[in-house]
Image (cartoon, rainbow, N blue to C red; front, side, top):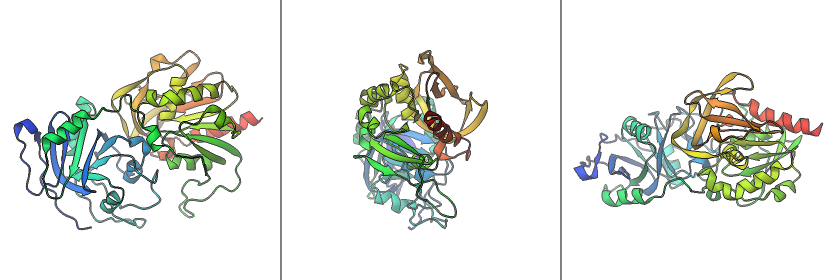
Length: 401
């Protein structure tokens, strides 16, 4: 890929005749008319979504392939994105679900022994549009203060844009409230998973002698979650989001896992909540949920979820575990949260965010059921949160006794 210098980033509003800088081949237009000019990367075209930001310094390929980003355009606050290239291993799903990306500076040639393609080529291969050369600090502050806006990103090499039409598209997009996106990213059929976590010497290896059998309900599951389960000795059966409780129990699992995923948990919960509630009638069955799975479990127990002003997206979020009194550094990606004031009496809050005291984990007092809002498989600590997978394994072992 030939590196090029992006134009000087400019922002403005349509009604104030924001001047298009020379050489600009991409633009971000927000629903309120704010305009950000830059250079286009990835696929040509347009995409409309909620514009959010992620503060992680590494892991951009995992972020771009995380199914939980369905319906979102990701702003990377770290300026140097793409400098280690891409490969076929560091993905969380085969087909990315995010709708675009925003970078501060241009992508350089990759410098990493594992790289097989540069990020620009990778974006093109997945039909993802991106923009570089804008001041992501300005955009991040705008999101921080006003909440995640709807926006339209457009990449046209000829530099021709209808700004008012792009603004109208952004304004017409319905937003994530009430949107069920799990149906869009879930698997289409039941599959088996036995791949374990990455080993520097051996890479990914297959589990050969499983001790437990886990059914994972796929609301948008990340591969490294499934690998983490396999590395605990679990043979994993992955089932689609709308699988019923009776179909899950027919697999005779030692435990059930509720995966991460995108969208409004209350909307997804239309079919997931009855499933979880039926599973909860089997009081001895261990259940573990992460992210959307955590929210769906809370809804099934009678709690409420709400849309957050900003959401949590990054790899530096401190969380306190009340069961151990330890603080762990976590990776997070969620725009909805469990309302801790709505938790019923038989549910204990186990984790909180030390950024804003929002709920980060729950467990039932009378049965082996627990969940967390963050992503223990992402290893930002790097191993701070891996104990949660062992905790799930221990509950399955206790059940066998």
